[in-house]
Length: 105
Image 1 (tube, rainbow, N blue to C red):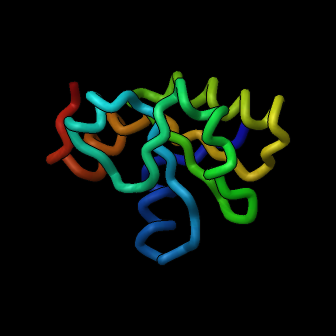
Image 2: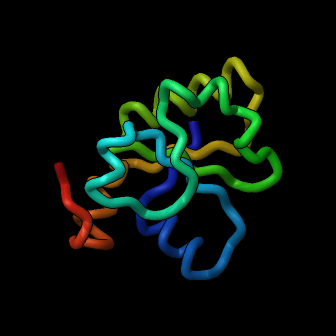
Image 3: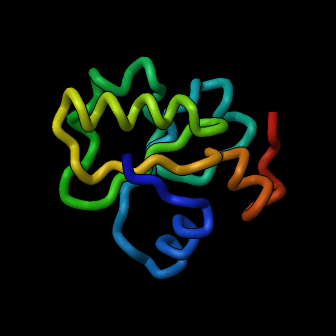
């Protein structure tokens, strides 16, 4: 499983590198803050897999990283994705290390 730190994601974003960021948290969780990207709740991820790009790096994140790990595993194992990354620490790590204005719930 490929992993990306919040600092690596920030560097990609700052450099304007083409990537797709997918937030798999629930609707009510996104209200506390987000780091942009596409919102596809985990329960909808497989049904909406057609929205996930295969030609650029795709970074999946959740609150702490646990759900994102499961999502990456499923997409790689059962749907053949090879360009998926798990954001280690999720949005909690982003809030702690990059943007403290995001509420940690």
